[in-house]
Length: 222
Ligand SMILES: [Zn+2]
Image 1 (cartoon, helix red, strand yellow):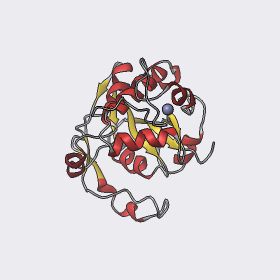
Image 2: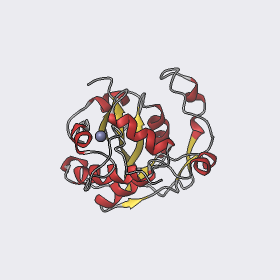
Image 3: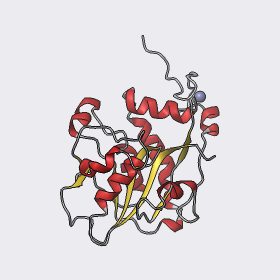
């Protein structure tokens, strides 16, 4: 039996013209409205930790919210097209953000190859590809590599265990991003630990500048 498509936010049946989200959920989607210009709470997550150009994020992630539902379906329910939908929403916003400047490459946080095989796709790939499309720049997913199939340690705080295994992410070409402006992209920023260690790997490149963004940020400072 083929069920009519349901809203990923509230499970209501979608009507004609609606895709992924019903009109109510779409209007309720909590956009951060952060830009790459003014200082925002995401910048402050990374202060003193890593030398980023600027950080931003598209949506607020809240417990039991629409965004949590979207990300859950994207990551665990084979709904890869949600990344496309979000990327085609956020991409034009980034394009119109004059403070972002010229981006030379959009780079997704990579999955380890075993994880990639298991899930079948990197949940930030489509989103990142659409950002690259709208920014009229290159999508690069073959230079920054995850070398160990372990979770980023986020529970032990900034001085936690992961500082001992910085090689969790590495570059297989030390020159590829030389003097380039890179936009590094993740799904959800929580403690910032994943972004921090992945960006550290990128920052081994001479002359690179790193911007970061994500689909969502845990709304601890709304
Ligand atoms: Zn809905």
